[in-house]
Image 1: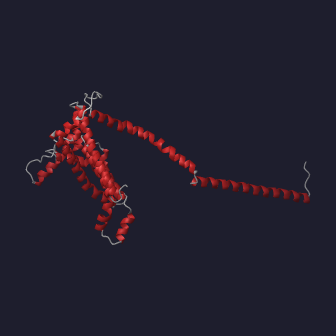
Image 2 (image 1 turned 30 degrees about the vertical axis):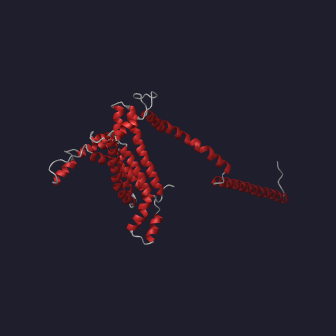
Image 3 (image 1 turned 180 degrees about the vertical axis):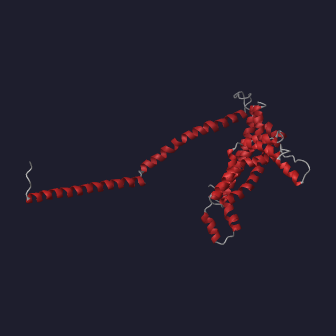
Length: 338
């Protein structure tokens, strides 16, 4: 049994306990401070103090490694078929057989035949008409939509892009109903009393252009809207403070700065219109033939693969020239890529 402490002993014992408690408290506090300092050091390290050597090594190693799958897919699905088509276009063998001989006679046949040249001109004319009409419709719509706010802007964008949720073939078949001799459009024309009989619209170049405009208009709207949205609001505000009228702000600021987007949307719509074959085949009814239709007929009907491949290469060259021209023009536009 422990002996009860006397008064002096009790005071000494209490002093030792208090000293131990205070010392332990200071030691714990010092340990906690060290821990806090370590935590602060770790947070600072994570906040941005990264080893430059590690960053330099990551820049050297990561980009090629990350791009390798995309490069393989592009080579397998894009470059491979293009090379095969190019080789087929100069082949003298039958469908699908290469190596029997090489010739450029297929290109000469296309370029020397007036019929095929007229088909190329028709294709370019349709592409230009679709591009121009799409731009005239898309620019005012995109500009007005950008000026809206909240749910109205979202609703307008949804209405513009909603047709993309339906496949092109189904939308094209819908135009057959609308443009038929006994369709609703001709019924409205008959009610107006302008003409006595039905207006021939189906299976014409007009029907092809109209169907392509409806199919490709969302792409032009999206390109123009993106370009308009990228214009800094401060630039327009500065023009307003400088005393420019709304008309001057549009023609001096908005329109020039949006031209790169207009050029990108135009080349996209032209490329899709010139290479389209579903809409011209359905709405043209065989009376309006495009280069894409010739390619399909040569591959699937005539089984003349080398000639069809040559036509495809020529169409690819024309589209490539248009894209190169758009690139050169865009570099000279305000806000264009350098």
